[in-house]
Image 1 (tube, rainbow, N blue to C red):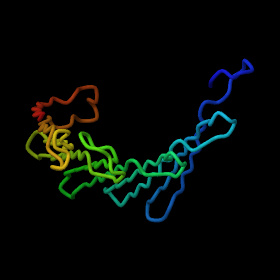
Image 2 (spheres, helix red, strand yellow; image 1 turned 60 degrees about the horizontal axis):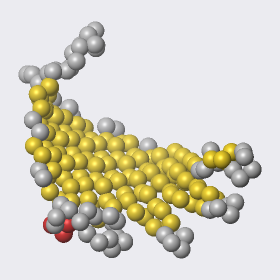
Image 3 (cartoon, rainbow, N blue to C red; image 1 turned 135 degrees about the vertical axis):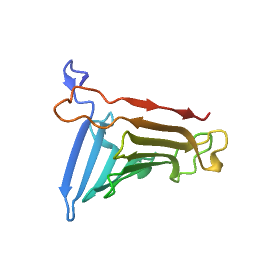
Amino acid sequence: MLPSVNGGLVPAVKVQERREQGANGTVASQKTTLLPDGAGNWQVGEIRRTTTRQEGDNRSAEEQVSIPDSEGKLDEVSRTVSDEAATASGEKSSTVETYSISVPGSVGDGSLHLVKRATTARIPSSTGPQTIKQQVEQANPGDPGSGLRVTILTPTRCAQALPESRPHKPFKCATQTAVSQ
């Protein structure tokens, strides 16, 4: 809420949300943020559309963010795509890709470009610690046309999960992180 010219309070933002359950484990949602235009009207400031799908142990999601341009036409400015999967052997992996019209170190062309990819793999072991591998790739601001480069690589080994009778005990992990500049 913001102070009004009459001494009261007026809303500074309105949010409208809609969620629909679809077929085959699909959920679609839309969140619209409305902002006052100064003349007593509400204008769209941002629309976020998210679609998630669940198929067994696999899950995928996509989020699109659109904002109005100078003429009020909605333009997509970012998209995030994520996938999570599990194998019969217990390995779990996830990938999150981020696309944006803003690429560090370059002049925008209005198109979406892949600017970041984060992957995580959890590999169980029947004889001891599980291994967690994380990798982050990002656009190089010094050479944006060269594609993504690995900026963080973190292999981690964690002790086996403790029985449920001892949930207060923390995992013991050893982490090594390599960061590129």
